[in-house]
Image (cartoon, rainbow, N blue to C red; front, side, top):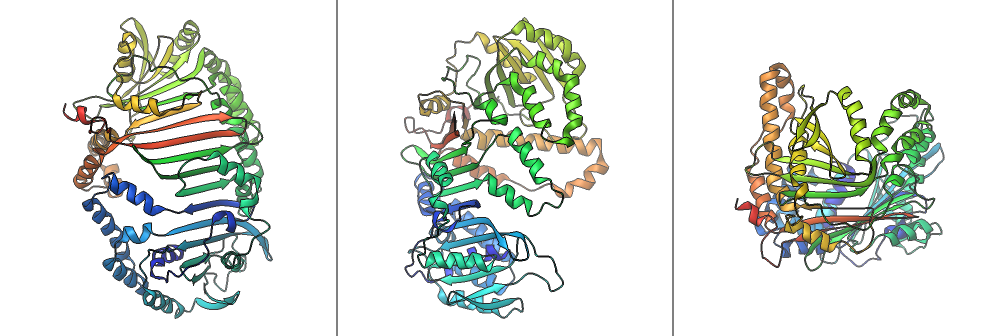
Length: 591
């Protein structure tokens, strides 16, 4: 078990006396690489219990898994923690805690800098206290030769050293551990300076370089919305600075230019999550901050459009939907912009010169709208899961001509299906693991103003549904679209979680079993080499738990909108349909 893991897990043994709260905004410096904050975990546990997602049997099963994790720790600390867990509910102990994690680069006297971690666990006023257990466990640690007790800001701090005497070059990411219990707080850092900053924060000091006073934090935090039991953020510029500490060949600057061209000039990424309200079990939000404007791949996705009705070929067997806007016509230009940033990609640039005309002949007739649909057919077989993508087409004749010229070069063969030309090719075998949603053949077809791409069965089913009236979509999808905001969006999606936990999981198990049997027959020697790496055990109990949980779940959904400063993303997990009192898959389960 790692030092930090030990600190977190035995944190519930400390005295819960009142102490000033810490926050990532207060502790983190302005050049933070990343921050994580966890508060209100008890509200999430309450919401899951209230919704019956976590019944008494499941709760005890999870508690037992936590206890079993410590059976592998043979140290005296592990013994103390196991004793504590036998006397208390592990989930309650953990959920009553809060904490934070901060990572940044700070100057170092003997190197270009060092990665510093500062973390804390606040045990909360409701935590069970076993002070004797804490004292006993840390007295055990202090007896080890690699543990020293040092004074920092008037406190006795345990310093767990890791650097060997023969190590001359300092590690840019020190592996030492500085640990102290301050009332109900457990403080941890990998450097003395990090521990000093934590103790200063505990003493109420306001730092001149606090992250909470910066524009980037105020902006990114403002782009989030809703529950914030969990908040995490990654700041891109400091991340590259951290990477440079390990860069012996000067590659970081070149990689940074390639990243900006490939992904976009992202400055920060953040996410928050927590319990939902009413029919929502959980909610989350995300932010991609790009103050310099859109660029890279994200620019190709940054096009908000009004929502349109689902096409008629989306039927009741649909288990997931994703709608995106993609500027397909600009993909060749995007590829060239990435290649231009990295001399190591010159070979790809030469290849582009050769295939760009062909690529443009296929991409230029395409529109922006992309719809991906996943379906499950019954009775369940290994081929029941299928995926098809439909891309808007502004010039069907031009696209058909391009496919006729290029598809044969990809070993695709044409055939007629209900008046439509379908191009199909066998997927490679050779011991490959099964690809979810693709069962043997991949097909292309231009019909109904769209290019259909996907498994042959899914493409044919979509072509048959082109004349449908559009009233066959499942009820879970109605709940998703009703939740979406009445505004143009860059993308949105939804999943029938009940089906994903049951039918899709069962299909994937069938596919893996079939693949294993085929591999045993085709290449017995290879099978003997790898079978020990595969999980071969009865998952019946787990699937039964999934089936029970699914009866309390509705769909999950998300949406994203773009702007001059980046993307805002929102998501939820819904509960069962209160109007019917059944899960979304209840009617299909009876088939």
